[in-house]
Length: 357
Ligand SMILES: [Zn+2]
Image (cartoon, protein in one colour):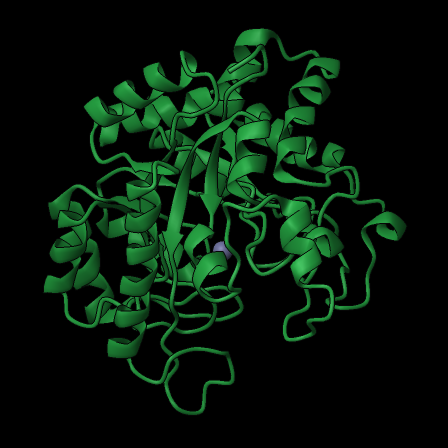
């Protein structure tokens, strides 16, 4: 696909956008924005940055794409489903969307190393018609309402699981909560390890993170996670946590949510231009992970673009996901050589998956 660098995005909520935001991702970003001009139901209406044509334009040829549905116990103020059964059913609707996109030649699911190699060959030699590859991941495991459903999910291609999302989940405690993993969490972790599923540490609170590290021996990554050294909040990882992932030969994908790039971001009030949010801050996070590792083998992109936010909460020098192509130039300016840049833009996720799928 031209001369641009292949980009592997480690975290995109594609089906959530299709099934909850009602975005037909086959449209261009402009078409989606225009269709939402009068809508006010969500803060990012009219500000989306992701569509399948824009991914193609930016040579984002492969990604990790999520199923996501939260279960909230009564009294929990977060939005979500009232039962894990409903949450499971919602994820199955999202799966149905992925399947239809596969049938239409827009996406191709990657479940094995063979699939991955085949896809990368096809993408490299394509003229723009090749389906975009995706690895299926589950963000927050509350929808796994009975442990045996995890194997069912593995059978339809689920290859990564983040045990928690926001708040206290069934299996672990997520962002903005505190606490460990308990008996159910231990059961889930054991089953993740037995099935050979990748454990996504993103969104785990510190206590759950370290408890999981004590009992889990399989592959780990942080699909969309920034560094706490820049933004002191529990959503970001400490250097110790990033080092733990590095020591396990894992990879951390840096995210583009402005609230994770500058401290003191106020939801609904702050403006990316005014706050000076640019792709340079994304590169700062990439660079910090590389400095901790002493090499370029553990940092990557997990943009999370359109993960409940759009242009109003992104680096202001990015209009659509195609602008991820600006990152290689920024890395080059910092002295990263071509090999490092390829590692970061796609090579590290690919190496990790070839080892662990
Ligand atoms: Zn997330």
